[in-house]
Structure formats: structure tokens, C-alpha cells
Image (cartoon, rainbow, N blue to C red):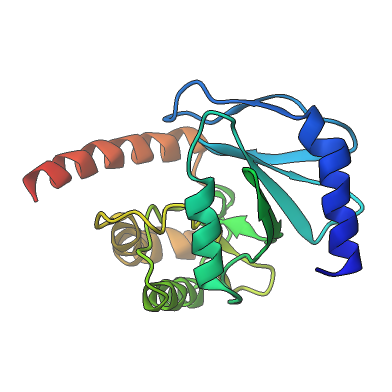
Amino acid sequence: MSELLKKFCDLLDLELRPNVDILSEDHHHPVTVKHYPQPWECLGKGNYAAVFNHPDFPEWVVKIYARNRTGFVEEAEVYQRIGSHPAFSECYYAKDGLLVLKRLYGTTLYDCVHRGIPISKTVIQDIDQALIYAKNCGLNPHDIHGKNVMVAADGRGLVVDISDFLEPEVCYAWPDLKRAYYWIYRPFIAGLQLKIPYTLLDQVRTIYRILRRLGDRLR
């Protein structure tokens, strides 16, 4: 562990960990962050955990699991297997429900469609190659949807969330997203640079979840 990382981890134990309050009441909905100390910033919330950063350490983020949620051990193992790869984050420290990760900068595919930002085939191909790499590490890419993959500033594809990569079930989210990209996005949306409202995107996501559940029952 470098001296800078040790300083950061000491700050976590002294400042963030004792003063953060994360509540998860329903695993189908994002956690509630009831309190955290300044100058820390909450970057995002998932169904099991929240992500924070400190302005003095912009290269790292901290993912903290809610007290009553499992998944920390599994996610730490996934990062250990992934190691270092340009399309994934990297874990530098994992202890007691807390992960220190390399911060990834970019725009999710979901937000790209909303804002009319073009999504190139290179992004899709980068993500494909990253998921093949993960499979070769003995993992099962799972829950890869438009909010879990990003376009980096250099135009390359990134995979943001790998917490479910030990799930044993077959997941059709990424193949379905690719079909939507090649069959709908490229021929009808990309060239026009349409900005799709979030309300419409959320409706599409809801309909997709219903159809996917029906499809899972029929398979």
C-alpha cells in the first residue's frame, strides 16, 4: 500500500466510516444516505451500497454497503479476479463492507441516449471484449444494462458495475441491449442525435423488465 493510499484509508476510518449512515429498506430500491460528513460527496446510490469521494483524492471512490445488505465479500472477490483491465475499475482496499476503487469518468449509455451523445460501435466492441475477459477470469457477466456501462472521454467503453459477476444465472441484459443498439439506435436514433426524455427511457426500461420476466418463465 502506497503512503498516499494509506493516508486515504486512515481518513476513511477517522472521518467517513464513523459518520456515514446508509439505510436499505428494500433491495429493489436504492439505499437512502441519511448522513455523511463534509467535504465528502455522495456520487451515487445502488440497491445495496452508496459511493462517495473526497475532493483531495479525486482518483478514488469509496463504495460502502448498507449494514443489512450482503454482497461485499462477493464483490471484493470479483475485483480480485478481474485485477487490472482498462475497461473496469480496480480495487485497492477492501475491508468490513467498504471498497476503495479507481474512479471511472464517463457518461453512461443511458445518459448518452438522453443527451443525444453519439455511441460508437467501438464502445460496444470494447464492452464485448471486457466481458469476454471477465468470463476468462471465471466470472459470469450479469446485469449489464445502460446505466452500468459508460463512454469514457476518449470514446472507449467502460463497465461500471461488476458486483453481480458471481451470479450463476444466465443474464440476457447485455445481448438484449446490443440488439436494441444495432436494430433501433443505429438506424433510427444515432444519425438524428435525438434527445430522449428520461420519462420515456424509464417507460422503456419498465416494459423491458416485464418482457424479460415473461421470457425467463418461457425459457
